[in-house]
Length: 211
Image (tube, rainbow, N blue to C red):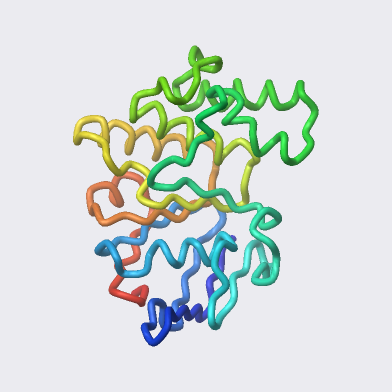
C-alpha cells in the first residue's frame, strides 16, 4: 500500500534522509523505532506531502503520488500535539475532513458517531476540545484522522506527553482500533514497548536511514 523509494532530504549541507526506502503492506502497521531528531518525522512529512524531498518518490497503492498535493493523497496524519481546532467541538473536529470532502451532512453525522464510539468517546460529541483531558484529545485526533478513511495513516509519536499508565492503555487501544478498521499505518516512536504493542513489524531506524 505504501512504497517509499530512495527518498533523500537535505537541509543545507546536512543530509537528513539518505536514499531511504520503506514498504508497508495493505492493512499492516509498521513502527519506525529510533532516537528523536534522527529524521523519522521528516520522512512522515515527505510521505504526507508536507515536504518536497530532494530525491526519491512516494507510491500509494501502486500510484506515484510524489507530485500530488497533500490534501489529495488520501493520507491521514496524527501529530504529536494533536493540532485540534480549539474553536470547534469534538464532533466538528472529527467531521472536519469529511466536510472538506463535501460529504452529505447525514453521512458525516453517522461517520462521526461511529468513530467516537470506536475511540470510546460517544458522550463527548458536543464538548469543546479545550475541555478535554490529554488522553481524550489523543483519541479525538485519531478519530479525526480516521474519519475520511485514508489509504495510509501516519502517526508521529501520537502518545507523547501521557503518564505511563494512560500511555500503555491507549497504546493497547490504538493497536485494537487499527486492526479493527484494517488501517494501513506507519508509526514513528522512540519507545520499543510502544512499537511492540501497536505494530505488526518494527523497522529499526538510525539517523537518516531505515534498516
